[in-house]
Length: 350
Image (cartoon, rainbow, N blue to C red):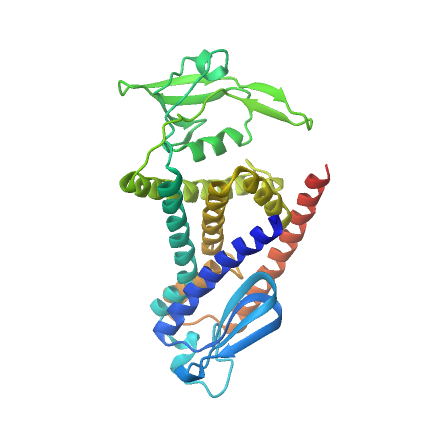
């Protein structure tokens, strides 16, 4: 059942991403050769002949991935197609809109899922306001009380529970954490907090601070919209912090997960219930959006980078150079995926 849920989840997210590219390309007038869901051998395909649509719509064997194959993504690559139907011959603004459309669709999808989740199940406080701080734990012992808002930890600004949780898990050169807290009277006080270290059943050590969100549940349309916007911003902000922390070394590459790790995560979410599956789908949708917007080769952001470079230098980059750039980047991404998958398997075995 877990693998079915994972396939459906990834299929949905990839479909909406590629559908974004597809719709933008069609509206702008770029020739789309094929719109495919899945990778590998073709299971079946069709064309909308009645609508005089030249695009081939196909379902492929492996349900991981998909693509929208547009004519002239780098240079003119086919005969019998009008010059203005090649993507490479459209204006910089039109190419940018096509390239960013997949990210936009994933972001919209995440927002809709978060909104539906809040409407169905209600929502909890998103701001980093202390909901409980039990006695005998480091937070309470330091003097932080229920109702206080944590605004910074070790120099990192925090405004949501998502970001606060991540910051607490970053590598630290000291055992003492510096919390900047906004008190209920508006004043700001700095506290030094030393977490307890507890050993888990699997032998790993966990830092325990003794702080959590309140249990009040907000219901209704307006609170749900506020939750969806707040959660959307919080997840995106947290993801960029993760990327920055990976670059600086505050997070190890072992913190990343690939398909095997996702399978495990989906299984755990399924045990919790459909609400957890909804949240995970929204999270992965935003993950796909953020990763794709990065200016790295083989990603949408890498292609947008070349549009920006073209705008700066005043002429197109040599197509061969761009192709080499994307090919090398694709190989590096595949090697990274293999490494992450091996690490996932090692963690699963242990």
